[in-house]
Length: 349
Image (cartoon, rainbow, N blue to C red; front, top):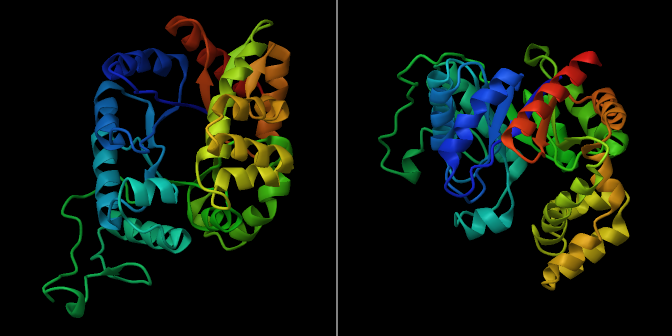
């Protein structure tokens, strides 16, 4: 089981945060993921990280599939893989209508079909094929009746470090998970509860894997978990309430919130409705208070060492291969110690 970590670059301390990565790298951290959403672009941050680290893998977590053309995504991935000497993982996802239409001004249409075509185009670019694609959503070169008629089928000028850069897809919907299991190298769900994962996603994963090219290898399953180890850390579970409430309650309108749908599929129908009603009514604290304790506990690694070992074992048994942790401690030294500890605990499983 690899150990990963999301990079928090909010505020003005980005360079200091990256400077600390060297310590996490020495502690055994395997991969760092850089978010984008509607913050600073993740690409410039990842290039900087590549220059400041030696062994650490770097992943986008995630780039949305709408705001860049498929070939621009492929160029970006090849460029980051080049400056990192083959340490890059391309994480992509559909995001949601609020961000895509609100921030980027692009229609949020056909996320599944676009994802499939984008991955196909990226892999053609990385293999240095002349990029020709006749799909429902993308046509390369552009047909004459849609432009000047001067478009040519081109191939990437540079020779990529790898022609098979790993592609991870963030997905939670049944059809999107099925597609991911079929064509991607990795899958990143959110709010992962190992005890309920098979019930929620098992059929989709099985259907996708049945059509999976064996050459892709095993699907890397990447889950996120807050991490704190000790006899007095239970209170840290509360840190997860505002984020869970934001996603379940506020990341989408009524009937158009993927995270709310997931909470319902987990069996928290009543709580999901209450959280959304309160959040959309501006009552964020009240919404956070309604987040089920079971959800916070089962998707976290917070508690005494024995409890964390049990949760790690449950995650591994459910199929997790990369554990993306958020170490919670009073200082940098404590967070590094947590990475060292969880790395060893995972190795002992």
